[in-house]
Amino acid sequence: MMAPEAPARTPSAKPAQLAEPVLEIRGLCVDYGYGADAVSAVVDCDLVLRRGEVMGLAGESGSGKSTLAMAAIRLLRSPGVITAGEVLFHSRPFSEEGPRGTIDMLAANDSVLRTVRWSEISVVLQSALNALNPVITIGAQFDDLLRVHRPSFSNRDRWNRSAELLDMVGMTADRLRSYPHELSGGMCQRAMIAMALALEPQVILLDEPTTALDVVTQREILEELMGLRDQLGFAALFITHDLSLLVELADEIAVMYAGRVMERAPAASLFHAPRLPYTYGLLNCFPPMHGPRRPMEGIPGSPPDLRVLPTGCAFHPRCRWAMERCRQERPVLRPLGGPNREVACWLHAGDATIPRELAHPEPPAAAGRPAATGPARAARARR
Image (spheres, helix red, strand yellow):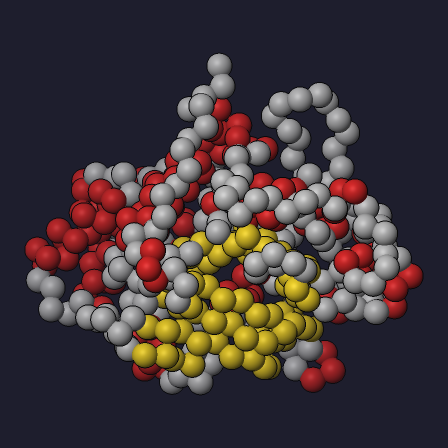
């Protein structure tokens, strides 16, 4: 028997602050390499993450999602280089720890960055087994973090805080004495999330945090994470290739392709009425759980080589609705009716005939969060 749908999530702990931006990315450009051999991995990207909001960043591997996030906090590895743009972090004026006011992350010195990272902006990476130190216990890794950022804590304070954090993510304090290899993949990921929350940051960057896990464990961890978001009020930038999962978690979603943001919309609008052919393809990469059988559509071909991008719209070689204009001119992101609704597609500019798949009416403003689809729904059905 299919389990009933979970109730919609409640608003964040501090609804009055939802309209305030906490992280603004403006015109960010990132290259790998230098000179004539440079490859543009992120091109002119704009994103605004607001307090208490979950911003989803979706796209296939190689679309520039992780590069964008790492560039925003200056953690790019060589030969990555930021060539243009601005990243502004707005710290809480009432923050007891860390900096106050607005910080230009791209101009900040190492001292300021060390203060902001983890205390104010933390990261949960894709593979916890690679992120955790394999030769020391989970408790020792929590202790190192708290010793550096909370020097006033005693040994007992650090232990108690570590136990409290594990309890928040559904683990018992005895796991502090375990090494990473003694934990399951889901428990390691929970430990990483607990470490990311240790200093009560304002922003958490989640870079495909559950990709390597089975769908049941993935569902449990994500529901716990969103519950913590509602409880603690942090904002999250959630990066994933699985758009069917993201539409259920995020408040707003940006879809990237070949280093550019190609569509941005509230989650309900993106799910019920995608405007970009690429977004439509991502949403149809999983079979429906109900209704008649139908052929899988998906997206033909592969993402382009960033060294030799096609002319015009980078997606046109894979797009069934490509026009001559798509092959010649690159579309720019432009407003498309409705709040926070933008798309870069020539089908929605001029007199082009819009295919019915991309012409669904916008959902009403009161529309609820989309239900789970694909593996996400299958995981819920097993519970």
